[in-house]
Length: 270
Image 1: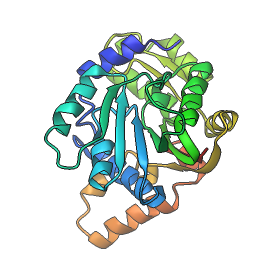
Image 2: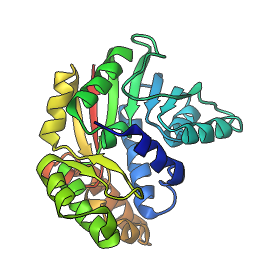
Image 3: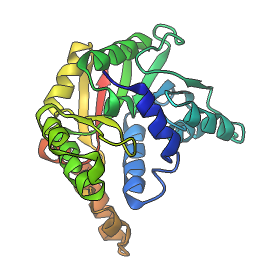
Image 4: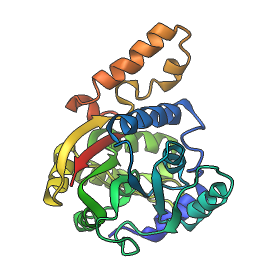
């Protein structure tokens, strides 16, 4: 079972609010995710940003005129969002501490859209993931949309090898073997990303189908720009830069790229 206390402890120390702005990796992820949202979102919508941390995407969407409800497991991150919200002209409607397995504070068919940009990174067991998605289905209106980010199996598992080089106290032969066999990672240390789940695209799509969602699109986020972000943002030639961003988008639905892209997005309909 997922240890939610470990998740909360991790985000109490990790600077999640600034993660997307501290380096070019986060910068590209943020810009490409915004493009995906702008492409697919309806012009008006009531949106639940579930697992939305300190509200990076919530504030972006509120500025665009959407009615946004932010929810996250971390009291610390929600408090950061509340403090920022008090300073914003375009405010988030609510900021609540919520476990993604229990959305009972929300009504049936309350939302047009749910963003799930965090919980699927952490929920280790299939029954937990199904419980989360069934709750999302309940609070979505008919024909409502879900945007769910995930870490694909191959890129997530290979990243644990890289983690060993940087933090050998977090990885041994057993949990390295486990992540490649099951997609589940359990950190041996109390430092760093604690627990993770990395599904194949087929596994993820099957899960959503079982929870009565219809796939609209699955695509990479950073895609062919993954691990090339510093080079991309150092380009001085605007035409070349724009072409590379265009190519990231053009190739984003190729399965082989999704599996190796760092982060990917499932877009579905209730």
